[in-house]
Image (cartoon, rainbow, N blue to C red; front, side, top):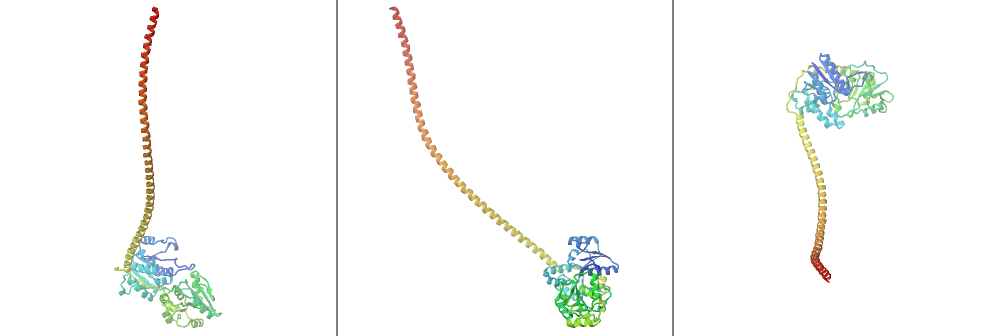
Length: 450
């Protein structure tokens, strides 16, 4: 088969720090290839070239690979892979419990439900985790009457040959997750040991009485495990620790290192049955026995050899899971409705804000209109006053003009009379002139006769 292996982190290398998810992916990769399958690993682009950068990118790359089977070791990526090929989702960690210690329980609940809803098969790292996941599977519509899922434990990969140190040396390592608290155990162990031995920590916060190495490449970590007296693997109790089989425990077993571990953890029964460490003794007694007794964990490690742990996955025939009802899909529909309601609320709030803005704008316009109306009324009053003044002025001017017109007419009449008198006088003058002419002529005649 062509198998697409989706994971986070760089695949294991002795000279690099390695994450648990990448270790799990590396074991699946080797087992599937050893069984004759073509395996195409695909990680995020931040983990190396050619990776995916988003759910859409992942779906495109997965579809282009045309796989016969997809094994997803990063459950949060499972929804993007649904329906491309039969999908195996590896539930090796109780993420929902882990999220409770990180303040992310609500987000992890949604991711867990979405992951198992997308899956056609699921893997657990120990039987207890099947108990934990059954309820979530039921909510996603899985048939619980058939005991769904496959128990595929973490593999105890063979480490360097063990060499017991002359001076007692205990190791404790891993990422300082908030659900894994070694603080009290380390402090008590350091106080009891005193000068009798050493405690070396890897990746954990530095504490008085311990030798801190920080995070180191995988090869250095395994060498430290192989050269120690025992592993300090006892934590403050909480539900996550009662369910989880951790990768550091698998490394302890692979190196043959005995464990001072928890009496109620998933490995407790195996440790008791194979004398792989101490789980029931008080811490000080367990440390004393670890120093004095020559125990190893090879017998228990044999139960977690890759050939045994990967067998259920290799034997599964890829097939799509029948699907019916699902709380996840109902939740998805509810989420769509809630998103629609939220959009409606946002639209209504936006409309309310717009109405409020329009009302404020209208109030401003009303104030402007009122001001304009006031100005118009003042202008009208002024115009009325001006019209009244002009009417009065016209009346006065009219009266004055009427008087002047009568005077002018009287003068015109007087002028006409005078003109008539003048014309009459002119006629009289002309008559007198003519009469004078005749008299002058008569006088000259009389003088001529005399």
